[in-house]
Each structure stands twice: as structure tokens, then as C-alpha cells.
Image (cartoon, rainbow, N blue to C red):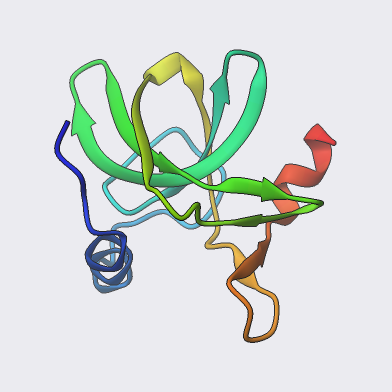
Length: 107
């Protein structure tokens, strides 16, 4: 599986004007999304689009917050497993920990 540099994906996301920033099913590379992984809700960034879904690099839960794992975790999710497109997670201070208000409904 080809690995995508998250820095490139994130920076390209902010240069694209068509990228939705609210809940919708329109999916584009660089969108932050909530996915269903075997019943658990996870969050990540779309790295590649396929006809029937997308490859998503997912974040890891850290208490009630989220962080990027030390080893990238990118897998394919079908369109049905991609639940919604969300706003960019909010970084908490200078630490690489993020708050994702859209995930609160799944706690």
C-alpha cells in the first residue's frame, strides 16, 4: 500500500477552495472524516479516492482527544463506512494533541 505524506495532504487541503468544511458526504482528498472501523468511530484524513470509497489515514484516541500515531495507519474505507466530513481538528496548545468536537456525539 502506498503511504501518503500527511503534511502534503494537509497543506494541499487548505489550498483547495472546493473542500467542504462541514458535515456532508462530498469527499475529497485532504478532507477530515469520521469513519466506522468495525463499530468504532475513528477520525482521519482522506489520502486517496477510489470508486467505492477512500483510503483514510486515521488518528489514534488519546483519552478524550486525538493524535497522529507514530506509525501511519492508512486503510481503505467504503463510502458507507465514511460517516461524515468534518472541520479540521483543533490543536490543543503546542502539543500534537487535537480536540474534535464532532466526535463528542459518539462518546
